[in-house]
Each structure stands twice: as C-alpha cells, then as structure tokens.
Image (cartoon, rainbow, N blue to C red):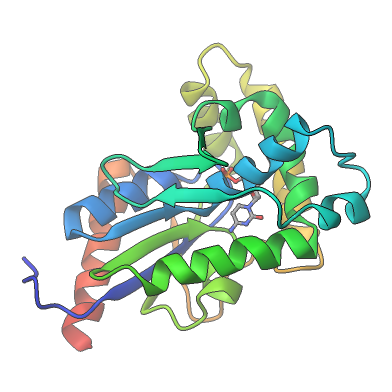
Length: 228
Ligand code: DC
C-alpha cells in the first residue's frame, strides 16, 4: 500500500475504443487513490455542444471558430466522474450514437484539440496525489513526461464484442465496422493522432479479464513509484 506522502504520479493510458481503457483507468485510479480523467468524454462534450448549436461539422473552419465557446468541466473523482457543458450535466447525451458518429470529425480540428489539451494539462497539474488520464494522444502529446505510459490493444473482434455488450442489443458486426472506421479516422488525422508513444508499455487485453488488466497496470504504477 502507498502512503499519503507519495509524490504525485501521472499515468497515461491510450488505445483504441473497446480495449477496456475506461474501466481499467477508473479502477486503477480508485485503487491507488488517484484522480481520473476521461478525455474522450471531453471531446464528446464539445461535439454535443456543436450538434446542439447546429454548427456545420463538415466545415472545420466553422468548428474552429467556436471551439473556445463552451465551458467544459470534468469532475475527476474515479468513483463518480462527471462532465458538464456550460453547467449542464451531459454524461448521458454524450454517449448517443449521434455524438459517437460525429466526434472524430470534431476532434480532428486543431483548435478543438488545443483547447481540450490545455484543459487536460491543467487538470493533471492540479491533481495533488496524481492522476490517471485516458485517451488517444495522452502519452504522445498531452503529457509526454508522464511517469508511466500504457497502450492498450485488443483484436477488433474482442473490442466489438465488448462494445456490443455495453450497448445492449447492438449488432456485433455493425459495431466492429463502426469501431474500425472511427479508429482509422482517429489514427490518420494530422493533429496528434491515436498512436503508441515510443516509451509506452503495450498491453494486449484480448485474452485478459478486466481484473487481470487492472492488476497488471497497478503493478506497473507501483513499480514506477518505488523507482521514483
Ligand atoms: O474514448 P471515447 O470513445 O469516448 O473517445 C471519443 C472520441 O474522442 C474518439 O473517437 C477520438 C476522440 N479522442 C481524441 O481524439 N483524443 C483523446 N485523447 C480522446 C478521445
């Protein structure tokens, strides 16, 4: 067990959708007494605001022009992560199919990324005990000096099966195609694409249970803390 005097530890967990990033990151943060930040939720929140305000998402200039407008606030308690836009709780509406299908276009706009990256860095800097930050570009761009970088992977089949399980009643094949399409868009965009940092530890979760992945990451964090 870590004592309260441990130095803050910054953990970056990246990878495509359906690899268990959110469940793992939340559980690791809770177990180690760290804060937790879901950066995908922030990109979903700004996308939700753009949809609600009828911004033309096919026009990156229009998206860039309003990127600074919504106030996005993330609560970083892993037991109860929250997300609001201009004071409205958007935890549920950011998970709709409409937002999911549009978030890649919005998050590819450099002005959106600059805005959200700034929020992420400021939350990480103010986390007293440290933080687990999950996303796509955390180890490469947002927090390149993180103490530990993890890159989670899993086969497309395993990822689609997990996502379909989360979204009850959704067809696995359709989910697999949608995941592959979104990952391709997120990996090929010009500004900070989904990528594994050179110094990240890659964990293939295809044949692991969630509990095994959590244990693996907790062990890696504890090793880093001991070495600090
Ligand atoms: O993790 P998620 O599925 O909720 O993420 C939603 C989208 O946000 C994802 O398709 C890509 C984008 N995203 C990003 O570009 N950079 C991040 N650090 C996190 C998410």
